[in-house]
Amino acid sequence: MRVLVVEDARSLAAVLAEGLRDQGMAVDVAHDGLEAAAKLDVNAYDVVVLDRDLPGIHGDTLCQSITERDDRVMVLMLTAAGSPGDRVSGLTLGADDYLSKPFHFPELVARIHSLARRQPFARARILRTAGIELDPLRRTVTRDGRRLDLSVKEFAVLEALLRAAPAFLSTEDLLEQVWDEHADPFTNTVTVTIGRLRRKLGDASIITTTPGVGYRITDPAR
Image (cartoon, rainbow, N blue to C red; front, top):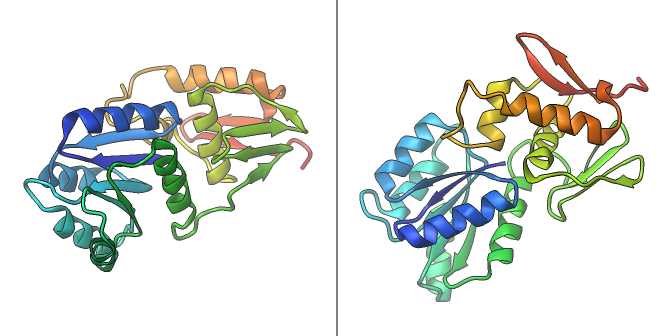
């Protein structure tokens, strides 16, 4: 899952980004509305965590512009103003959810996952194929009932492949969805992560590779 955090308080933005990355999300950060708008034009995001009171372009204006895009992104609006009237006005602007500061970080994570599931064409909460069951919210994965101990990036790569199945994801797709805008396009980190994931799944044929196309999940039983 790829998330854009738009927060002008740099210390808070850094804490949020680090915490969400620890949850296996690819996170980009913008510190004002203009920077956020530029990133939205270049990158595809699942959820935008949007501070309401932003310099450059106000959060309200940015939220409205996001809702008018063809490639609709789910918006979680953050604000220090937490009255019922503020929440109603934020949702009226097109925000999909609203969280008042201060908030508990686990609640933010749960709401981001909830919004991702509400995206158009979103898949079921529990992802299943080839004996694999992956729960993004509880961050658990099993293969034929056996619990797998995956790293953050291994889990995120597997989740991306399961969501895309039966389609292929290229190395560039995985770098974009699992890492972030600072990922080196010439790195072999995707290849290394796929190799570790195959070993932990116990069957290399589950993740197939087509040169020049990418990777995909297949069911060896079919």
